[in-house]
Amino acid sequence: VQLQASGGGLVQTGGFLRLSCAASRSDFSIGDMGWYRRAPGKQREMVATITRGGYTNTADSVKGRFTISRDNAKDTIYLQMNSLKPEDAAVYYCCVRRPSLGNIAYWGKGTQVTVSS
Image (tube, rainbow, N blue to C red; front, side, top):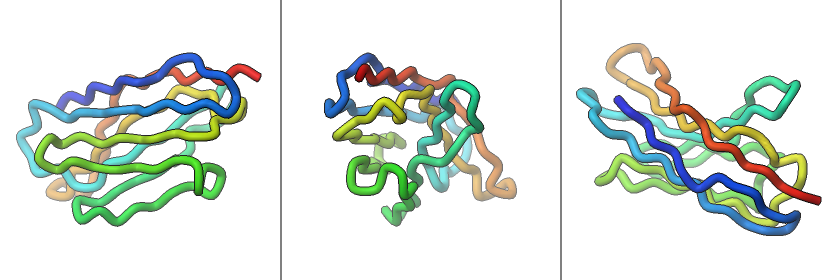
């Protein structure tokens, strides 16, 4: 499977961005999809995940500001990020799970989000 993330960039505090991640060349049925991020000097953390059925799980730190959505027909997820803060700056990674193989994770290359204060 190939994961192509896009939509990162530089934005001012309070601004917004929309990330997209499309999964392609998958020879298996994709399960949960999600966004994770890693800020400099910090561990990777979950931002938001979504099941095929649309059930979402969102980190408390972004709840109310970030919204994850999914288009199963396109194997694509989106992350609408509003009211961005400097602490949201990180490399954002897309992840998909393979339920048929112990729910192992596949990761995209990441897209940089920079928030200026």
